Image (cartoon, rainbow, N blue to C red; front, side, top):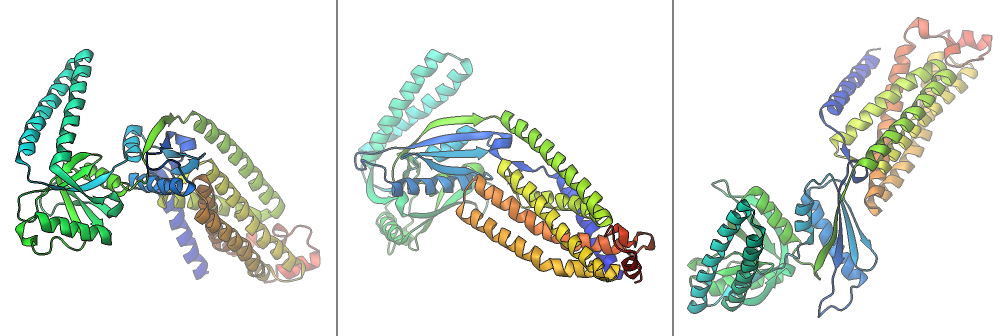
Length: 476
């Protein structure tokens, strides 16, 4: 009895914990239930690459997937469509423009060496001053709302940027060190102050080129031009202490008074800076949740209807054990939904299907146990021994069925993608929780029930039991 009391206390704590989690933390919903952004990315050919091969499309998909992961979106869907397109679904993304900026940017990273052309440097300073004036004017024009003046100033800005890029090409020499050599990029806070930096690391070839670059520039006052999409984002100067060997080891830090958000976004773009071909966002569509709400409503009706019928059947057919199984199913539902929340599972329609299917498996486990218990009662054993044997004999069948299902879920999760993985995850978690509730909750509640003489009646466990067996069953 002491053991049953401990298990009851544990179950009570789990129930309270699950209710608290479900009350305080909302369940994440997928794109089909809550809406979000859907982007179609067109992979484009170049003068050097005339045809998009399946391998190339796979490489682009891998880069896009890394960028999506870096966005922190749960349950994204990234898949190729046709010969040259990739569709990305981002559930719950409220800023599709940010997603487009991160996913669609080619982010061609390049490290260049500054030459000693004073004339170009002087002209560049003048053009940059003019650019800053145009940017200030642009803000004023946007506040005034003069669309014609805004368009004229934007044209002047584009022309000025083109002039500056041309001067950059003259001032900074390309050395063949770019995004393809980049191994990692990550945001990191400064040792002092509130600014953030971006740490980068090169592969072996990139590390050697970077060491040679820094060795040549150390102590000269000339800078390393770090360009992203032909735009100078940083121009650090290398100190004279690196004149002998350069900066070795293949690691460096981009400083620029970044905010945490800007540093993280830049790191994401840098990590995706090795796209083999250019890409373009050809469609950025916001998916509403209207269909999702209708689907949720229908799913709730279907789930409640099915669950009610199952609860009634279990209570009518299996009597007292059926009622206890119903209580276990309610506990199972609470624990499973709470585990979804704690593990960050994004619930989509396939995920709901996996959850409902796991409810069926939880019922199946209880059916196996109660049928074995009835067999033991008909064999003339006492009620306590019959219940105990019922759990013991059903355990191997429950274990075999659930383990094979979990293996199938693992394969689906490993090999599948998007909604298939969501289905596998919810079904797998549901099966694991159902084993716990069937073998622990049902067992504990059943033994707790038969500890009361008023509930220790064999006919409440096995109807139509012969009178001679009833006396044996109730004897101990």
